[in-house]
Length: 243
Image (cartoon, rainbow, N blue to C red; front, side, top):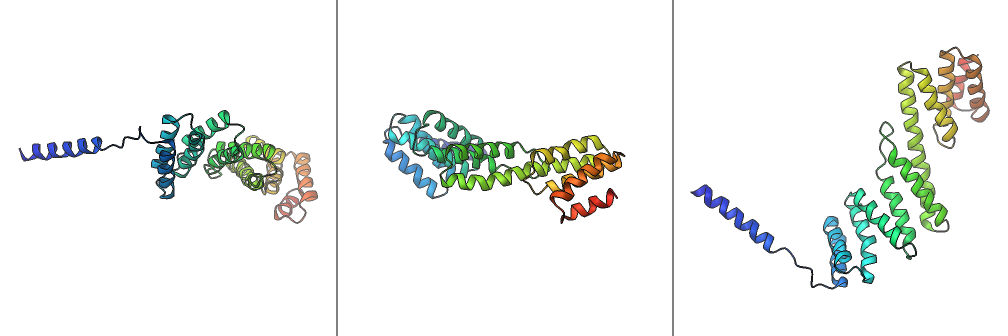
């Protein structure tokens, strides 16, 4: 009986909580937006996103609905819900291409991908998407501060992609799968010449070609390394291999 009363008591508490759920249907768009913004300032990001969404749903034709769409995306981003943030940003970009905050929307989309970049030994889809998104910011809004920051972050995104190729290439090299390794190192040489990984990639090519007995190819890779990076430690190692 005592256990039954405890269960009944808990059920009543839950029922009471449900009954107290806030009814926002009578609130104005501005009031809802203010509530959302207050939650955002209190770092209650998920609740803020919920209120911003209410502005959109309950007052879709108000000026606050457009603001709420973008701010809701930001709240999702701060909550770490990148998929929700990207969905909101894509909707904003699609339906409000002439909005004064459109550059910010494009930039935030890139940042959402950028913050999801994984270590070099993991899949680099986020790096590729971040690079492309930042590139769009530069092309469309080249005279903004967003473009300046995008250029710097593109370098880092590209470096992550190259680092991943090197990581996989070294794995194949250690497994004595030299052709697969060469494919990865050549990818870095051809596509990621501006990254810090280019010197090691040329050395690894020299190393793999030497192991395979492809002397001419090894010398060619070493010559490229010597010509472009004569002071590199990787160059010194490469030259020893082709003597």
